Length: 267
Length: 339
Image (cartoon, rainbow over all chains, first blue to last red; front, side, top):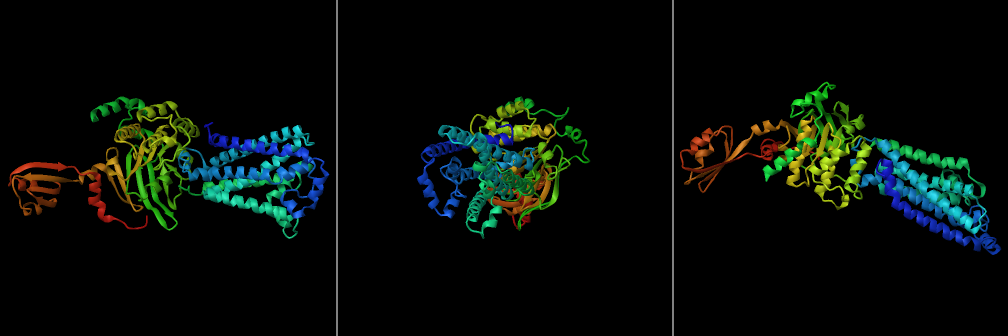
């Protein structure tokens, strides 16, 4: 577990990853357990229709889909807000800690006294961030698949995999942003703050774009638009949207890769 | 006590540091090592300058350290020693000028430079949640090609405990890990930033012995300190840096030859200060209660002849520390620039 920068970075995450996985499983299980009481309940459907469109948009039920269907229920309760929030917080924590965190604790000085390039350190730590987030995604996928079987949801493992993939990519986009800012500045607090602000503002911009036409063009720069505007659980993966998120994450890591090689270490 | 310690060190000396070439003892073996290099220069600064914004870190450093040399880099805290050393490791980049190590640019060829350099940082921040052994295994893996047997030998000699978590270790014990780390791959150049801080005197002796062995095996040692007696024992030459500028580069022997001696003569009765004050090479004359204190540079002849006119009860002489020599020669050249 200490054979490389990549392996050590993953090792440093194992405890945190364990707790996050537990929390995610508990959340998923408790929400899914609630589904049978909602399913095919016409009263609730009527109730939902009474809510203003804007409010529903903020809760992720963008197209007023039927909350009594499995896909509509999971979008409102999990994939609209809670699950993307958790994946973003998790990945941003890893991304901001990757370079800026190690610099803040001043251990970067001894690591970089070994004959390892800075670019390689960025790539290995990015790799660890990606793997840890994907592992969390796999945990979510297993929980969803098992939960769906338990309450007899009409969504299969492949469709769940597609939804989990998009939320993982969304998390990694913001994780990549945090990593890049950490690489540029060496300041973990700044990386956390900017990434969180970016997540909140692009989320709101995308949600409000549904109801306010003048904001609508802004959704094109919002990762949340590419995350679930196409409603992956109902319609399947939108490869173009997923590619945009993956490319954004890759570009951000690339920016970090270059930036970290060009500056003085913060010591 | 001292003698027992020396014999202990000698007994361990051979297995501690593999000699890289036959006959590699003292200064003799060093030529064989740098065959490919135009000059036998291990470290060279040319106009090396670092500014932090407007604030000067170091400015226009020009320096050559010969291969196989043990070189002291001296100066008060904040003089720019750590700034210089961090540029050698490519942790920070020069504002202008170059640093060359083993013929390679410290920036462009940094990875290869670091492959051949061992480094002890001034304030070693080690991963606090790892045990000593885990830390060394990690850094050895990242480096590659490290013989674990070498780490075991160093651990025994420095009496380091690798089983404890780093956050439970004292400053000195963390320093030992940093030293083991720097020596584990038998580097050709050792760059040490205040390496003995926190070490007890016994371990300082062991450390100095390790430095001598590294030098005997042909390694170059660049050693910074703000405590002059620290480097006196091991260094061939020293550079003195102050407020970011080099103020002197001297052989230790030359520095010492410039030495003055402090003498104390005790007489049977009162003596007049005038009898000694005007003598050639004699300064700082103080007489009180029949005791004369003064500093003498050069021969003692005149002072002894003057003293012989009175009844001398006792005579003691003190060799100056480098610190005293330094202050006497360079104390007036203080540059009050930034830094």
